[in-house]
Length: 147
Image (cartoon, rainbow, N blue to C red; front, top):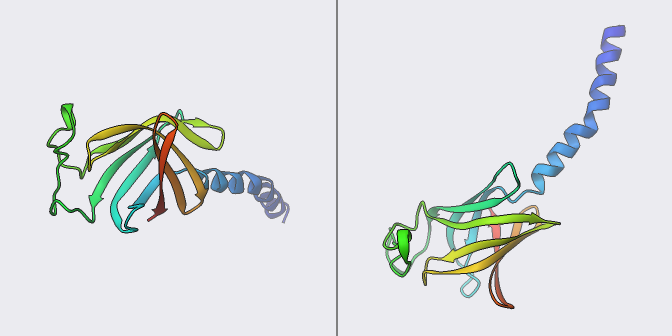
């Protein structure tokens, strides 16, 4: 009887740690996201965001769902190592650093035009992520939805 009581108290004492662990993982943008075109509202691709141990984010296109350039589009307007490479499998978001309740200071690539922009991201809620690409003080935001 004493052993069961001790186990129960131990489980009760550990409960806040379990809840905090779930809350921390829910506050991370790590996971799979549907990218939504801010002009058409169509789902364009699935991007998988990973978070390194230091908190930095990167994102890779794992699937292209809608493209005006056929079923397996390449980044024909990109320069350097990404030029003419398949968009599926391409890292399009990198070096976002934790900054309070958002991630900033990174770079995002728009495979449609081959251009890169300063980037930031912020969780709107558990299932929506605001991702911005900026030139100087002009930013354009897309809201991605968790898959």
